[in-house]
Image (cartoon, rainbow, N blue to C red; front, side, top):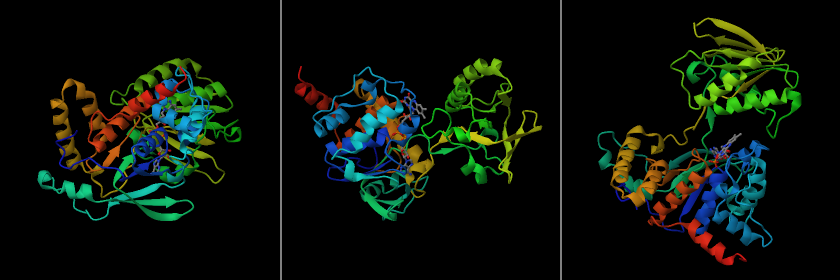
Length: 421
Ligand SMILES: Cc1cc2nc3c(=O)[nH]c(=O)nc-3n(C[C@H](O)[C@H](O)[C@H](O)COP(=O)(O)OP(=O)(O)OC[C@H]3O[C@@H](n4cnc5c(N)ncnc54)[C@H](O)[C@@H]3O)c2cc1C
């Protein structure tokens, strides 16, 4: 279906697909692959759906009908005759979604033996193709032989030690947040930050692992202007166990500072501006200049102001809710090669422009999932889980060489024939 790529992306089952991450996207990708007869290996740094579990009792903003699929429900019904799917309009909390849908799916016979939890993938390379394309000879590069070569996946298992796995194809479902930018101006690192990160306070009042002993009665400094930071500040204020909460925000006058989610920041700031009190304070700053922890366990923080003067602060706890970015994985892969990326993107863009109206959506999604590394797909839910499932369908349409391949529709039909009505 993608004809113009310099390699043939089709992959007949039974090939082996490695899936990175066992969040909602990774579980769904593994399920889709298994239904099509591929072998799968799923690698997860922590535990299945841990992010959804951490999301805890907060409601998911999409109803069950949009975050479950006919494939998932079909698998649960096949596993357990007594299973009753949720009402399509029901709103799960993160914890319910994990416990009632994702974890049972991970335990089905289809997936159970293929999941390696506590097993972060720490590197990926090819076995034999070490060539990198020359920027001015991209069309002469051996893309197809690279595609025919297997991936070598280095896994650091908590129980098994470091070991190597193989796969013909990778679907990277590591989520959108694997590392945070720094506390310093414009996301740079503050002096002392790298040594301090492990001691930052991670769990706040609505989080599953929140421990009031680490929070109540303390002076807390929270740095970050992301939507997540805004939400956490509101939740902290609602809980109100702290002695003082100090939120470090960018200067409102800074024209150049326009981070993603800045609308949310503007709204939250204006709503909270009249709440300044003995227990809550917003401080405008370009970022943290330096940070260190005294032997008594007290944080010393130097903030940089807009006029480049500095302000000293002390705190019992520091919370970092700065922006998150995807950490690169596999230095020799072409996923991070900007020339290869530009070349492949321009081919896909051309294909997109030539696609007729009925194929436009799928061509657009192909651009989202194909990377410059042949056989390496990236699957993100940055536009919500429902869109993530559509992108997943596109990946398997590409692998199967059939743009009309839609297991969701097939399973939906099958389930409606089986339903008692
Ligand atoms: C409080 C909160 C509210 C949210 N509300 C919504 C909402 O209402 N609607 C919505 O659509 N989204 C919401 N989200 C975002 C939501 O978390 C994502 O949509 C969802 O988790 C994405 O699923 P995923 O599978 O892509 O990523 P994740 O759930 O993040 O899963 C990725 C997995 O990959 C694993 N991983 C990372 N690196 C490696 C590696 N090297 N090796 C092996 N495994 C690795 C991680 O441990 C993780 O388990 C919210 C998030 C939060 C925190």
